[in-house]
Length: 413
Ligand SMILES: Nc1nc2c(c(=O)[nH]1)N[C@H]1C(S)=C(S)[C@@H](COP(=O)(O)O)O[C@H]1N2
Ligand SMILES: [Mo]
Image (cartoon, rainbow, N blue to C red; front, side, top):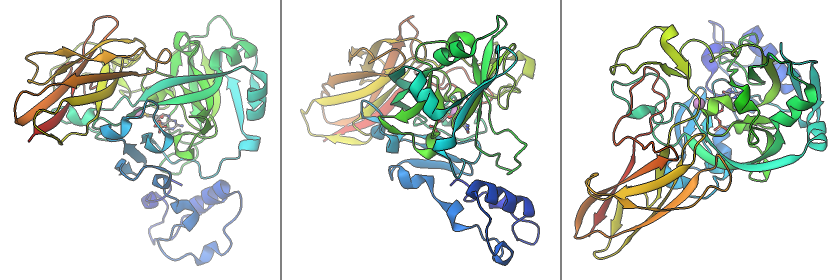
C-alpha cells in the first residue's frame, strides 16, 4: 500500500525499476511480476498504489504521504471511542503490502528469556485470556507545529491522538509463559514494515518500554480495534498497544518482541529520537545526546471536540461544549474552561475513564454575556495536580510533548 510516492528510491538513474525494487515487490506480492522487463519508465505497479486513505474519513489531514502521516481534526475526535476511520496514521516506513494472517507468528526472544518461543496468532488467541481496554495512543510529536522556533519533523497540530478499544492478550501473560531471567529490564518490538529506502536490512523503527510498563495489565498484544480487525495501516494483524506512553512504543505489524537485559537499542531508541533534554533548555538550544532522556508517560492534555472552532451562536444561546482529557499514566482530576482569555475559569463536568489509561469525557455549559468574538480555552489537571500550560510548554529540539491548552474561536451574533 504505502509504496505510492516512494518512487525516488525505486528507480535507477534511467528511470526504470531497480532489480532490488523488483525483488522487493516480488516478495511483497508473493509472486513475480510477469513482463517486469516491459514496465514503462517511472511506472509503479498498480497494486502498490493502494491508498491507505481509502479506509479513512475524507476530512483527515495528510501531513506527509512519504511515509504516511495523517492527523484527525479535533472535531472528528468527538466520539467516546475513536472509530477506525478517524484514527490517525503515523508510519515511519512503508506498511507491508501483504499480510498473511493464517501464518502470522509472534516470537519472543532476547538475552533475558529462558527460551525463545514462537506462537501462531491463532495459538495466542486460544491459549491466553482476552482483554479489552480503551487506550489512548498519542504520537510523541503531536503538537509539534506549536513550537517556536520550529522543530523539524511532521508538523502535527492536535490530531495525532485517538482512544480506541483494543482487544488482545496481555503481554505479561505471554512473557510469563515464556519465562524471564532476573536481568530483564526492557522489551523491544519488531514489525514487518519496510524502510523507506526499500533496503530490507534497514530497521524502520524498533522501540520498547521498561519491564514495569511492559508488565502492566493494560499492555496488550492486540488483534482487534473497536471489535473488528485492525486496519492494515494501523498495524494489522497484530500490534503492541501501550496506552499513555508515546504511541511510538506501540509497535505495528508486530512479529517479534525481544526481552532485553539493557535499555532496548533498536531504531529510534538511540540518538535523540523520542527524547527530551534532561535539563530545560532555552528555545533553540540543542544540547549533546548524552543530555537527553527517553520520554515515558505523556503529559496531561485535553481537546474541545464540540463545537468546531469558528462556531456561530445566536444571542442568548448557551454554549454546550464537550471534549476529552487524558494524562499518560495518570488520570485527570479536573477540566476547566475559560471564556475570557484565562482571567476566570469554570469547572467542567468530568467523567471517570472507562478503564485506566482511557481518555475521559468532559462537558460544560457556558454563558456568553453579549454578542461578539470569544475564545474558549480548555485546561486539564492530572491526579498529581499538574495542569496544562496556557501557551507553549518547555521547548525541546525534537518538538515532543506539546500539551498547551486547546482553544476554539466562537462568535455570538
Ligand atoms: N512497525 C511500526 N510500528 C509503529 C510505527 C511504525 O512506523 N512502524 N510508528 C509508531 C508511531 S511513531 C506511532 S505515533 C504509532 C502510530 O499508530 P497509528 O498509525 O495506528 O496511529 O505507531 C507506532 N508503531
Ligand atoms: Mo509517533
